[in-house]
Length: 242
Image 1 (cartoon, rainbow, N blue to C red):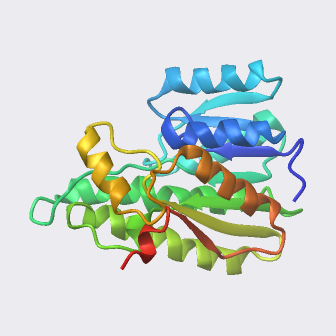
Image 2 (cartoon, rainbow, N blue to C red):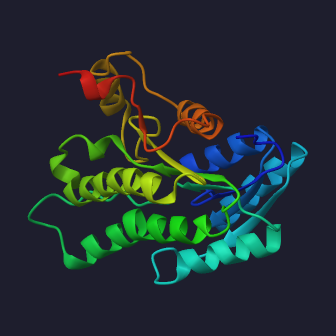
């Protein structure tokens, strides 16, 4: 699809990967709605950086884990920016919850943000894309592997993969729906250098990734007009190491 001048909503764009995605889309000429929940300062910095590059951006606050939050966000973006052509569902939480310690509150919080929110954001956004549009969901390598310390997280991201496939069929031909599944592109803040080195050493490409690698995959999926229902794994080959 032609990207220049189109309007994109990136959720969770105040920090980390979401911020990189917002900046990458702006670099391709899209007008960007920068969503945040608690990262107001980060969202403001994202908007300011886009504007310094002569791009168009506005920030939007919403708690996507609350019922009705995704729908209200989409409606506000479409109203204030006049259109909505692209949705990138990036907002998520990754919480270490080993089996035996998982609570109902943990489960509900993860699934509300990681799976329920992107579904209802996509459903609402599709109503504004009848003339054509694209949705890209951010899944995770955990959707395809078994991580004992992150079982609910992995299940929620596996749901994102299935949601992507189902929505691709349900929303065709007007809306294409794809996903990216990042691996080690941004490590948790509490990881040390030794842990990072171990991860790098067990990655087939022998390096850690970066947010730019994911941005490149997302831009490909937005450009690729004959691709829908696909998941691109961006992990340096970790999913094929065994």
